[in-house]
Image 1 (tube, one colour):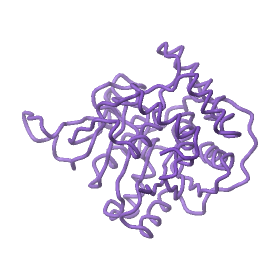
Image 2: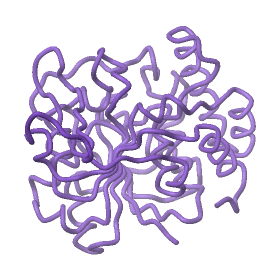
Image 3: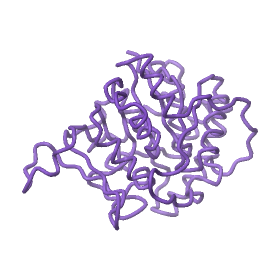
Image 4: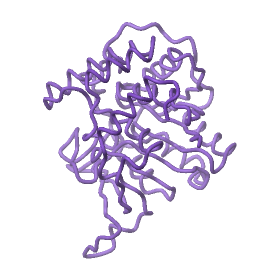
Length: 318
Protein backbone atom coordinates (compact mmCIF):
# COMPACT_ATOMS: atom_id res chain seq x y z
CA UNK A 1 0.00 0.00 0.00
CA UNK A 2 1.34 3.42 -0.97
CA UNK A 3 0.55 6.45 1.18
CA UNK A 4 0.58 9.68 -0.82
CA UNK A 5 1.38 12.63 1.43
CA UNK A 6 2.05 16.33 1.64
CA UNK A 7 4.31 16.97 4.63
CA UNK A 8 3.79 20.31 6.38
CA UNK A 9 6.87 21.06 8.46
CA UNK A 10 9.06 23.57 10.32
CA UNK A 11 12.47 21.83 10.36
CA UNK A 12 13.57 21.58 13.25
CA UNK A 13 15.63 18.63 14.50
CA UNK A 14 12.77 16.15 14.94
CA UNK A 15 11.28 17.40 11.65
CA UNK A 16 14.56 16.55 9.92
CA UNK A 17 14.38 13.02 11.31
CA UNK A 18 10.79 12.68 10.08
CA UNK A 19 11.68 14.05 6.64
CA UNK A 20 14.41 11.42 6.39
CA UNK A 21 11.80 8.79 7.29
CA UNK A 22 9.28 9.79 4.65
CA UNK A 23 11.99 9.91 2.00
CA UNK A 24 13.34 6.49 3.00
CA UNK A 25 10.14 4.49 3.33
CA UNK A 26 9.12 2.58 0.19
CA UNK A 27 5.40 2.87 0.94
CA UNK A 28 5.36 6.68 1.12
CA UNK A 29 5.01 8.91 -1.93
CA UNK A 30 5.94 12.50 -1.02
CA UNK A 31 4.16 14.96 -3.30
CA UNK A 32 5.79 17.91 -1.58
CA UNK A 33 6.96 19.58 1.58
CA UNK A 34 5.17 22.73 2.74
CA UNK A 35 6.97 24.94 5.23
CA UNK A 36 5.89 27.09 8.13
CA UNK A 37 7.35 29.13 10.94
CA UNK A 38 7.69 27.36 14.28
CA UNK A 39 11.04 25.93 15.30
CA UNK A 40 12.57 28.56 12.98
CA UNK A 41 11.36 31.37 10.74
CA UNK A 42 9.79 30.16 7.52
CA UNK A 43 12.72 31.17 5.27
CA UNK A 44 15.01 28.98 7.38
CA UNK A 45 12.46 26.17 7.39
CA UNK A 46 12.34 26.31 3.59
CA UNK A 47 16.14 26.31 3.33
CA UNK A 48 16.34 23.29 5.63
CA UNK A 49 13.65 21.39 3.74
CA UNK A 50 15.42 21.98 0.43
CA UNK A 51 18.78 21.04 1.91
CA UNK A 52 17.55 17.82 3.53
CA UNK A 53 15.94 16.57 0.32
CA UNK A 54 19.07 17.38 -1.68
CA UNK A 55 21.31 15.57 0.80
CA UNK A 56 19.09 12.52 0.33
CA UNK A 57 19.45 12.79 -3.45
CA UNK A 58 15.75 13.45 -3.95
CA UNK A 59 13.89 16.12 -5.87
CA UNK A 60 10.77 17.05 -3.92
CA UNK A 61 8.85 20.32 -4.33
CA UNK A 62 9.08 22.64 -1.32
CA UNK A 63 6.34 25.27 -1.05
CA UNK A 64 6.88 28.09 1.45
CA UNK A 65 4.02 29.08 3.70
CA UNK A 66 3.09 30.91 6.88
CA UNK A 67 5.66 33.01 8.72
CA UNK A 68 3.27 34.41 11.34
CA UNK A 69 0.31 33.19 13.38
CA UNK A 70 -3.17 34.07 12.15
CA UNK A 71 -3.87 36.40 15.08
CA UNK A 72 -1.33 36.39 17.91
CA UNK A 73 2.11 37.97 18.05
CA UNK A 74 4.72 35.23 17.53
CA UNK A 75 7.12 34.27 20.28
CA UNK A 76 10.85 34.03 19.51
CA UNK A 77 12.00 30.81 17.86
CA UNK A 78 13.28 28.16 20.33
CA UNK A 79 16.95 28.45 19.38
CA UNK A 80 18.00 26.82 22.66
CA UNK A 81 16.19 23.62 21.59
CA UNK A 82 16.82 23.37 17.83
CA UNK A 83 19.59 25.90 17.28
CA UNK A 84 19.29 29.21 15.50
CA UNK A 85 19.38 27.36 12.18
CA UNK A 86 16.94 24.65 13.29
CA UNK A 87 19.57 21.96 12.83
CA UNK A 88 21.77 22.39 15.87
CA UNK A 89 23.86 25.33 14.63
CA UNK A 90 25.74 23.57 11.84
CA UNK A 91 27.76 25.18 9.06
CA UNK A 92 26.01 23.88 5.96
CA UNK A 93 26.08 24.79 2.30
CA UNK A 94 23.08 26.59 0.87
CA UNK A 95 20.72 24.35 -1.11
CA UNK A 96 20.78 24.67 -4.88
CA UNK A 97 17.01 24.47 -5.26
CA UNK A 98 14.36 27.14 -4.86
CA UNK A 99 10.94 27.20 -3.28
CA UNK A 100 7.95 26.26 -5.42
CA UNK A 101 6.09 29.07 -7.19
CA UNK A 102 2.89 28.33 -5.26
CA UNK A 103 2.47 29.18 -1.60
CA UNK A 104 2.04 26.27 0.80
CA UNK A 105 -1.73 26.74 1.08
CA UNK A 106 -2.11 27.04 -2.70
CA UNK A 107 0.03 23.92 -3.16
CA UNK A 108 -2.24 21.94 -0.82
CA UNK A 109 -5.37 23.17 -2.60
CA UNK A 110 -4.06 22.44 -6.09
CA UNK A 111 -2.66 19.00 -5.33
CA UNK A 112 -5.88 17.87 -3.65
CA UNK A 113 -7.79 19.07 -6.71
CA UNK A 114 -5.51 17.01 -8.93
CA UNK A 115 -5.78 13.89 -6.78
CA UNK A 116 -9.00 14.03 -4.77
CA UNK A 117 -9.37 11.37 -2.11
CA UNK A 118 -5.75 10.23 -2.40
CA UNK A 119 -3.66 12.62 -0.29
CA UNK A 120 -2.87 12.50 3.41
CA UNK A 121 -1.89 15.85 4.87
CA UNK A 122 0.72 15.36 7.55
CA UNK A 123 1.31 18.48 9.62
CA UNK A 124 4.08 18.50 12.23
CA UNK A 125 4.37 22.24 12.92
CA UNK A 126 2.01 25.13 13.60
CA UNK A 127 -1.12 24.76 11.50
CA UNK A 128 -1.37 28.03 9.58
CA UNK A 129 -0.88 26.47 6.16
CA UNK A 130 -3.73 24.03 6.64
CA UNK A 131 -5.95 26.78 8.05
CA UNK A 132 -5.21 28.98 5.04
CA UNK A 133 -5.93 26.10 2.66
CA UNK A 134 -9.38 25.81 4.23
CA UNK A 135 -9.86 29.56 3.85
CA UNK A 136 -8.79 29.47 0.18
CA UNK A 137 -11.03 26.52 -0.66
CA UNK A 138 -13.37 25.16 2.03
CA UNK A 139 -14.03 22.08 -0.12
CA UNK A 140 -10.47 20.92 0.54
CA UNK A 141 -11.85 19.16 3.64
CA UNK A 142 -13.79 16.85 1.31
CA UNK A 143 -10.84 16.07 -0.97
CA UNK A 144 -8.20 14.85 1.48
CA UNK A 145 -7.91 11.20 2.37
CA UNK A 146 -6.99 12.06 5.95
CA UNK A 147 -5.13 14.58 8.10
CA UNK A 148 -2.45 13.50 10.58
CA UNK A 149 -1.37 16.13 13.10
CA UNK A 150 1.68 15.97 15.33
CA UNK A 151 0.67 18.34 18.08
CA UNK A 152 -1.52 18.85 21.06
CA UNK A 153 -2.00 16.90 24.24
CA UNK A 154 -5.12 15.20 25.50
CA UNK A 155 -3.98 14.16 28.97
CA UNK A 156 -0.25 14.93 29.44
CA UNK A 157 -0.31 18.71 29.83
CA UNK A 158 1.93 20.94 27.78
CA UNK A 159 5.60 21.33 26.96
CA UNK A 160 5.79 25.11 26.42
CA UNK A 161 3.14 26.08 28.97
CA UNK A 162 1.59 23.98 31.73
CA UNK A 163 -1.26 23.19 29.33
CA UNK A 164 -0.13 23.77 25.73
CA UNK A 165 2.00 21.81 23.28
CA UNK A 166 4.37 23.91 21.17
CA UNK A 167 2.77 23.58 17.73
CA UNK A 168 -0.72 24.39 18.97
CA UNK A 169 0.49 27.24 21.19
CA UNK A 170 2.39 28.81 18.28
CA UNK A 171 -0.85 29.44 16.38
CA UNK A 172 -3.90 28.48 18.44
CA UNK A 173 -6.40 30.18 16.12
CA UNK A 174 -5.13 28.17 13.16
CA UNK A 175 -5.14 25.02 15.28
CA UNK A 176 -8.75 25.59 16.29
CA UNK A 177 -9.75 25.93 12.64
CA UNK A 178 -7.87 22.78 11.62
CA UNK A 179 -8.69 20.51 14.57
CA UNK A 180 -12.41 21.29 14.39
CA UNK A 181 -12.77 21.09 10.59
CA UNK A 182 -14.96 18.37 9.15
CA UNK A 183 -12.27 16.13 7.72
CA UNK A 184 -10.90 12.75 8.87
CA UNK A 185 -8.25 13.70 11.42
CA UNK A 186 -5.83 11.89 13.72
CA UNK A 187 -3.95 13.73 16.48
CA UNK A 188 -0.57 12.28 17.46
CA UNK A 189 0.36 14.39 20.46
CA UNK A 190 2.44 14.45 23.61
CA UNK A 191 0.38 11.60 25.05
CA UNK A 192 2.42 9.25 22.86
CA UNK A 193 5.47 11.18 21.65
CA UNK A 194 6.82 11.61 25.18
CA UNK A 195 6.81 7.81 25.56
CA UNK A 196 9.07 7.32 22.52
CA UNK A 197 12.84 7.87 22.68
CA UNK A 198 15.70 7.70 20.21
CA UNK A 199 18.76 6.75 22.24
CA UNK A 200 22.33 7.74 21.31
CA UNK A 201 23.22 4.23 20.13
CA UNK A 202 20.19 4.14 17.82
CA UNK A 203 21.13 7.53 16.45
CA UNK A 204 24.68 6.40 15.74
CA UNK A 205 23.39 3.50 13.64
CA UNK A 206 20.91 5.78 11.85
CA UNK A 207 23.66 8.29 11.05
CA UNK A 208 25.81 5.54 9.57
CA UNK A 209 22.94 4.33 7.42
CA UNK A 210 22.01 7.75 6.02
CA UNK A 211 25.25 8.89 4.40
CA UNK A 212 25.64 12.66 4.00
CA UNK A 213 22.16 13.24 5.38
CA UNK A 214 23.11 11.10 8.37
CA UNK A 215 25.89 13.51 9.32
CA UNK A 216 23.40 16.38 9.53
CA UNK A 217 20.92 14.25 11.46
CA UNK A 218 23.62 13.17 13.90
CA UNK A 219 24.93 16.65 14.67
CA UNK A 220 21.44 18.09 15.05
CA UNK A 221 20.54 15.16 17.30
CA UNK A 222 23.48 15.92 19.59
CA UNK A 223 22.27 19.50 20.06
CA UNK A 224 18.68 18.38 20.66
CA UNK A 225 19.76 15.63 23.07
CA UNK A 226 21.75 18.14 25.11
CA UNK A 227 18.53 20.08 25.62
CA UNK A 228 16.62 16.96 26.72
CA UNK A 229 19.44 15.96 29.05
CA UNK A 230 19.51 19.35 30.77
CA UNK A 231 15.74 19.91 30.75
CA UNK A 232 14.38 16.55 31.90
CA UNK A 233 17.39 14.28 32.39
CA UNK A 234 16.59 12.12 29.35
CA UNK A 235 19.43 10.27 27.62
CA UNK A 236 18.23 10.74 24.06
CA UNK A 237 15.41 12.65 22.44
CA UNK A 238 11.72 12.26 21.74
CA UNK A 239 11.16 11.90 17.97
CA UNK A 240 7.86 13.77 18.10
CA UNK A 241 7.30 14.24 14.37
CA UNK A 242 8.47 10.76 13.44
CA UNK A 243 5.72 9.36 15.66
CA UNK A 244 3.16 10.79 13.25
CA UNK A 245 4.90 8.98 10.39
CA UNK A 246 4.95 5.80 12.46
CA UNK A 247 1.19 6.08 12.98
CA UNK A 248 0.67 6.34 9.22
CA UNK A 249 2.55 3.10 8.52
CA UNK A 250 1.98 1.16 11.75
CA UNK A 251 -1.21 2.32 13.48
CA UNK A 252 -1.18 -0.94 15.42
CA UNK A 253 1.65 0.50 17.54
CA UNK A 254 -0.85 3.00 18.96
CA UNK A 255 -4.10 3.00 20.91
CA UNK A 256 -6.53 5.66 19.71
CA UNK A 257 -9.72 7.01 21.21
CA UNK A 258 -12.57 8.58 19.27
CA UNK A 259 -13.78 11.95 20.49
CA UNK A 260 -14.02 15.68 19.92
CA UNK A 261 -11.31 18.36 19.94
CA UNK A 262 -11.28 22.07 20.56
CA UNK A 263 -8.52 24.62 21.20
CA UNK A 264 -8.34 27.46 23.73
CA UNK A 265 -7.25 30.59 21.88
CA UNK A 266 -6.95 33.21 24.65
CA UNK A 267 -5.91 33.59 28.27
CA UNK A 268 -3.68 31.53 30.53
CA UNK A 269 -4.84 28.28 28.88
CA UNK A 270 -3.97 29.60 25.39
CA UNK A 271 -3.04 26.73 23.10
CA UNK A 272 -4.56 23.96 25.22
CA UNK A 273 -6.20 21.17 23.27
CA UNK A 274 -9.45 20.03 24.88
CA UNK A 275 -10.38 16.43 24.14
CA UNK A 276 -13.78 14.97 24.99
CA UNK A 277 -13.87 11.18 24.44
CA UNK A 278 -17.02 10.14 22.64
CA UNK A 279 -17.97 7.54 25.24
CA UNK A 280 -17.87 9.99 28.15
CA UNK A 281 -20.99 11.69 29.50
CA UNK A 282 -20.60 15.32 30.60
CA UNK A 283 -22.98 17.84 32.16
CA UNK A 284 -23.85 19.17 28.70
CA UNK A 285 -23.05 18.39 25.09
CA UNK A 286 -21.04 21.59 24.51
CA UNK A 287 -17.79 19.60 24.30
CA UNK A 288 -19.07 17.25 21.61
CA UNK A 289 -20.18 19.76 18.99
CA UNK A 290 -17.08 19.38 16.81
CA UNK A 291 -16.58 16.51 14.32
CA UNK A 292 -15.37 13.18 15.66
CA UNK A 293 -11.61 12.59 15.39
CA UNK A 294 -9.07 10.00 16.51
CA UNK A 295 -6.57 10.86 19.25
CA UNK A 296 -3.56 8.67 20.03
CA UNK A 297 -3.50 7.98 23.77
CA UNK A 298 -1.02 5.10 24.20
CA UNK A 299 1.96 3.81 22.23
CA UNK A 300 4.47 0.99 22.14
CA UNK A 301 7.39 3.39 22.21
CA UNK A 302 10.02 0.69 21.79
CA UNK A 303 8.28 -0.61 18.67
CA UNK A 304 8.17 2.89 17.19
CA UNK A 305 11.83 3.57 17.95
CA UNK A 306 12.88 0.22 16.50
CA UNK A 307 10.85 0.88 13.35
CA UNK A 308 12.43 4.33 12.92
CA UNK A 309 15.89 2.78 13.14
CA UNK A 310 14.99 -0.04 10.77
CA UNK A 311 13.58 2.38 8.20
CA UNK A 312 16.61 4.64 8.30
CA UNK A 313 19.18 1.85 8.16
CA UNK A 314 17.63 -0.32 5.46
CA UNK A 315 16.50 0.54 1.93
CA UNK A 316 14.02 -2.34 2.01
CA UNK A 317 12.29 -1.61 5.33
CA UNK A 318 8.55 -1.87 5.71
